[in-house]
Length: 436
Image (cartoon, rainbow, N blue to C red; front, top):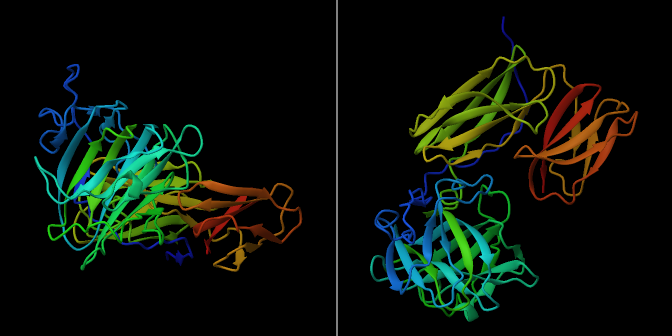
């Protein structure tokens, strides 16, 4: 008779997202003709991007895209560049739908190579019209020189020029891509709309952070978007404070989990069946998902592909996968979720302990500053590690020989979910905790 053991494991529940309403990975083909790489060229992006202002063509298509781990628009197709050239100017736009209420988000990758001076100028914004004429530029994203050499600051205004913009206090290194999420909140009444932005150097939060990185200074004075709402996205190379940058992986949508993120998992859990893992995950509202790659790890760091399950792309789905491996110690599993456009992200990590694994207890959980781990008697080479939801080791230390209880300082961890892994005499076990 088969015995089914259900374990306490690491489970994250989040809403699965629909695809962004507007996606631009600049997945075009170069014409191969010198000086024929304008984004508005009919043979490149001209079907989507329309020029509405400017005298020359500094916004150009390049075949190499930007990379940013975990972002759905990372390294797909090419990108666009904006030149560092005084007197060169161009404004282009693309229709992105119609947003007249609540908030609209635009996430994109930004790699600044020349910050252009101490004043700065804006290079991306929302618009109230599209096509050959665009009006009402809102949620303007700027960059300018940082306060230390070879860095830049990112700014935002609701409607004004650089003098009205609020800039980050953080300095970001030139030549390194960052993820920017522009948020424009449409509020009824007069002078009530709010423009803000989030800037990330690593990771993609599964939910909107409580506080933006920057909020526009002119929210209370800059005019609102008006009844037409947001209908276009503008890319702009101005003539004042001219810098140079690459932009890639643009996504516009009406919710956080639609813009920066690809599909996510509603639940992911596992059971132990005859010392083998039975994995179960559930999704809702799938859209353009290719499938799920199941990955396994013995140490929480190096993962191996052990199978693939095609997506059903229907309203509500449940999937199962059985790993035939006989589990003796802690074994880690995650899902690589791939969209049909090639973008992907990873699920949270879950861990399974064999019935005979090491018994661990932790206190308190959630923990703020100190975590107390109760474990079997430690040997000379015993080790405790902390692993984040991306499967990365962020802490490791040897345990005192003979100890049965150890204290770990977790005060420097950011809020979120983690695994404590205890290795002792060739055996391994893990337990989940929350840092608050």
